[in-house]
Amino acid sequence: MLKTGRVWALGAMSGTSLDGVDTAMIDTDGETIFGFGASRYRAYSADEQAVLSAALGRWPGDDLGAAGRVVMQAHGEALAGFDGAEIVGFHGQTLAHDPGGRGTHQLGDGAALAEALELPVVWDFRSADVQQGGQGAPLAPFFHFACARYIGADAPVAFLNLGGVGNLTWVDPSARRPEDNGALIAFDTGPANAPINDLLMARRGLPFDEGGRLARAGTVADGALEQFLEQPYFLKLPPKSLDRDAFADMIGLVGELSDADAAATLTAMSAAAVLRGMEHCPEPPSRLLVTGGGRHNPVMMDMLRTALDCDVAPVEDVGLDGDMLEAQAFGYLAVRVARGMPTSCASTTGVRAAVCGGTLSKPEVG
Image (cartoon, rainbow, N blue to C red; front, side, top):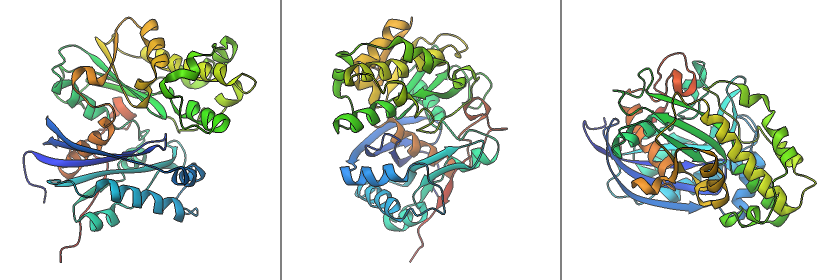
């Protein structure tokens, strides 16, 4: 049994950008954040990225032996050696996400990880939500609610994660609990870094547009941007979520452009998707706090600052760690699952009722 009160939880996250595994410690009781601890990043090698990329879109029952070995080895290395960890939150590697159809698939064996680490592991966070009619994503909003309290927000604030896919959480910190009416609205805004990264890899063999340098050298193709914004997804009301490759045709829209113009246009598409998403906020947030790799792209950030009336800043401006926020989120959610607390609700994923999603695996004693 997990002890009562505060515990040190260790969370792990490997996102759809396929760059590596983030691991981080958080001190929490599943409601309040008391502090943060050590963290670590374990990058995927080029060969490992190639294996995982080839597995994208695949489901249980497919031949995923090589990809599974990559996920388990990388996470085992990334999670080993954290002193004081009492429980682990293991997200796994998302390969496919189709909440209205086949469900959601995060590769990785939490039970095997529990044995290897000799710690309880919470995993398979998304399936229960999808099974009860939810989108299964995004799952960080309950953690964002706690973060808003942690930073002392006294007015609505929004968190924007710019990973492979963009997702937005609007938080009213005056609410009592994250599952209360009006406390949260969350959804995927659209593609973020994934198409830009895919373009750079295909054309230049580079994993991403470092510092937005290529995009800054280019010119946005307005026609392609307008076509992108005609996608039906932007007309849907939240909650709503996306698979990493749901907008794969974005690459085709910039296929005839130079490298620089294509990068500039894809960056503008990702920013425009966020701007469309902001229209769904019940009221403008006092601040838009940006996490994920996209906050390091000054072109993307400048596009957001130019178009929005609120302050746009990286989460580091309020004392949070944008590189580790999602890993911390799954440590936080692991404690909630272990204590039977909800991890999603109608306003975050569209699930019929607040649900506690996740499987708790404990190592065998002796």
